[in-house]
Image 1: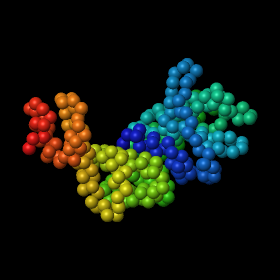
Image 2: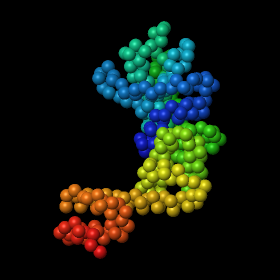
Image 3: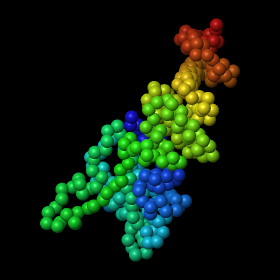
Image 4: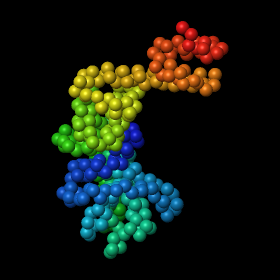
Length: 311
């Protein structure tokens, strides 16, 4: 199932390790594999065109490509739906990037602009059907004039159509794509184990992956788990959790619901009776669901705060 990219994917691909693994394994090029990815850095994807209209691509990276290329710029766009006119859109972003480089004086010694590679990551349910070359979207002119028209091809990665053979081991981008395609709890457990093992010394990446697990568990399982709760789940012995993941997620879901009810009761009490004593806050925080429900009902007819907590 396609999910919103904004929280998970953009957080993950803001990390150089993810871009490195994406470029090395999913864009077939020996030249790309040989680049020094320790030089990867994010650059602004916000542009102001000459007509002062602002445009923004999802993400832009650059990597040192050596002579004679200087830097290679990589424009990354995330899609969960098919955009028939994605090719003109990517061509626009590339042209605006080049225009911005010229404006900033970031050109090569021979005054050419650095090269840019455009990539679209798509996780929709239906296969991608839009053109990836702007020439296939624009009517071609006759009598040799087609050579004068714009040509740009972007790379499309249709995540849900990748085969298992196309998802290499020991690759963070491939791990993300496996999570995206997970169809059952056993697969989720297996991926959590892999994620926990591989990222044991990478807390930022682990938390970013927890966002993706949270989206999977929330979107498809009816859960309300937060990334922090999923992160906690990844810290326990996943071999022990095994087939009991549903029980664990249910427990965390109940804890989250109870925590929300406790916060709501505190807010209602404070509005009714003023600032709460620390002992009252502590009592609410350790209360059972039954107590919270009873106190909420008693609050409706309470004249003083003590009435709320009467047995």
